Image (cartoon, rainbow, N blue to C red; front, side, top):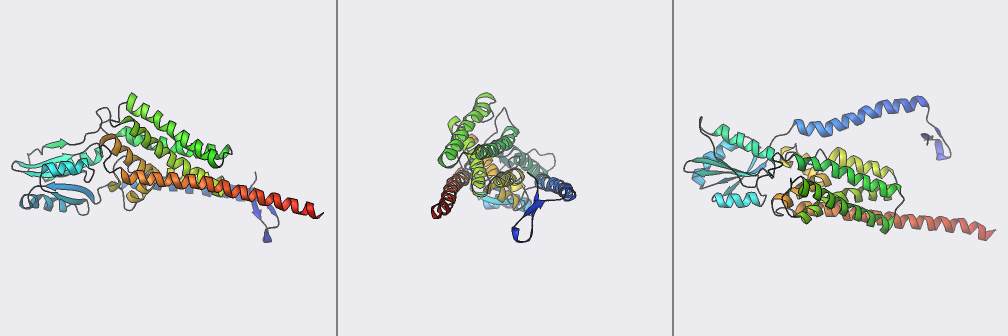
Length: 342
């Protein structure tokens, strides 16, 4: 299909000149590259803690020096106070904080959760060690450790892109095959369910990088896929095939780099981390961490986010089918009326 330009009044269209097409390609491709580099490289280059939830445990007198030292990292930490180490551990297991500094008689003790983010756990160790007296080693306890087979959390962060690609592909295939309405919705749900089980079989059963309940992990993986696939198919049902490109753009160039899967949402520039959690890749990564390592703690928010994307996407698929049927019926009636008049 050749590119066209509309004439005044929209009564005719003619192909764009070859020169204009060439200029459009020359300008568009660098613009897309610049956009991709901005989306992926800028958050990575600006990775640093921003209001990162961190606990301090102990009496107000004992924790005052610790809080004062942490306050020197302006804007880096959001401090939560706990009465003792047990309360701080509970907060870490509930995903309220990423770690905690406990004031003990022997000095500060650091609690971390590498399962929440290995990068954050390492950052907290460095921050607390820098504030300790020279020659003093700060004892550290990993309250919720990452899988022994994936201590750096690389497998979980690497799963974001494949799930996004599969979701986009599912929405595109359903659209291009001409599936509509309930059949399209059933195909998306069925494909997502199988993707979730296959992904869980690979990541949990074979690689052993996830340690939670198998079926819950499969459901989280499937819901992440469905959220993307339904959104892409829903956009395509409403605005046509350009909806595939729009959905892919949002998921790949915004959702993937803004997900915080490789670090943490609070490690990304504001408001990128927050935006990322509103999109399927970020919500999916957070949900997967919760069900795989924290027994479902803090899973409600990301699960609802993914569910809304899935419901709205499937609703758009059904709505698009209904509108198409009405449009076809109206065209049929319009074609019959002249024939009846004649």
